[in-house]
Image 1 (cartoon, rainbow, N blue to C red):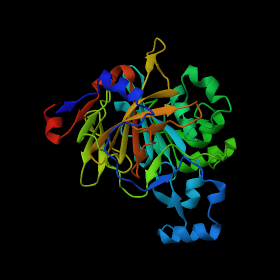
Image 2 (cartoon, one colour):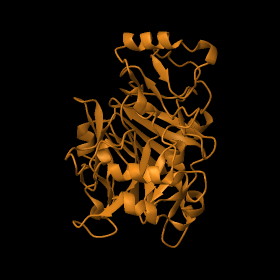
Image 3 (cartoon, helix red, strand yellow):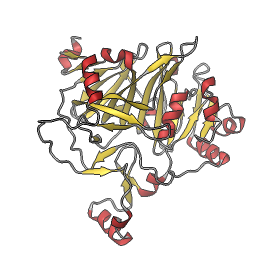
Length: 374
C-alpha cells in the first residue's frame, strides 16, 4: 500500500515539535553516545582512565566518527571533513569516489535537476573524485554546518559573496592557484562533466590555501548515534521510498540481509564508477525545507535556517521527525515527536532535501509487492 505525507500530519508534527506526547507507550532505553554535547569538565576521566575505558570496549586508539558514529582511528576523528559537489545528470554518470561519502546530500538546483554533495571523513580512500560541479549557496551553507572544507568548480552568482567571506574555507576550481594543483579534466566525457580531483591534489590545495585541517574547537557534530545497532523505529514498515525529484527520480529499496537502504536513480542502481558498487546507507532522511525559484534560469533558494518536518528511515522502518537549525553556522539537528533528539544507527547517511510544496508526493511503500505494483 502506498503512503504519502498529508498536510494535516505536517501541521500536527510542527505543533508537536518539542512537546512530549501524552499517554504514549514508554520506549525502551538505548545506549546513546552523545556526540553533540561536550562533556562537563568536572566529569571528564583522567587520561589513564579514558585509555582503560577504550581498552575495555575493544577500541584502543579509536574514537567515534562525527559523521557515522563508527569507530575509526582517533586521529582521523579530529580531521576536518571534505565536502565536494558532484554533477548529477546522465552526462555526469557514473560518479567516481562518491561511494566513499559518509554523508550524501541531494537537492534540486534548477530545471528539475539535482546536484549531490558528499561529505568525507577521509578523502584519501578513492583514487579520484568527480565529476566536480559548481556551488549553490545553500550547499555552501550545508558544508559550513559540518565545519567542512568545501570543494567545488565555480558557483552561482548569488554565492560569490559568501564564498569570498571568512564564513567558509573553499577550494574553487575558478581560483587559478587551486585549479592547477587540484583539478584536472578527463578526455572520456564532454565539459563541464569532466572535472576530477585526486587526493594528493586536494591535500596540496588545502596546504596552498593554509586552511585549518582539524575540527574547530567546540565543534560536536550533527548526530546522536547508538553504541550498537539498536534503533528500529516504531513507525510503519518501509521497503521502498520515492523522492520527488523530477529528473533523477531517486528512490531507495531496503536490503534486509545487510540492513541498509540501496540507492537508485535515473531508472537504475546508483553506482560508483570506481568500485562498481551500488551506494547504500544505514540511515536515510527526507528533510522537508521551503524552496523557491529565484531567477530566469530556474535556480533555487532554500530556507535552511528555521525548523520543519522530516522522515527518518532505518532498519526497514520509518519515523516522523522534525529538524531545527538556529543559524547558518549551526548544524541542523533532528528530533523525535516527543522532543528528544533523534538517535541514529551507526553508518552512512543519505539526506534528501524535499521542497515543502512537493512533500505530499513522497512515496512510501511497505512491501516489495506494493513497490512493484505502484
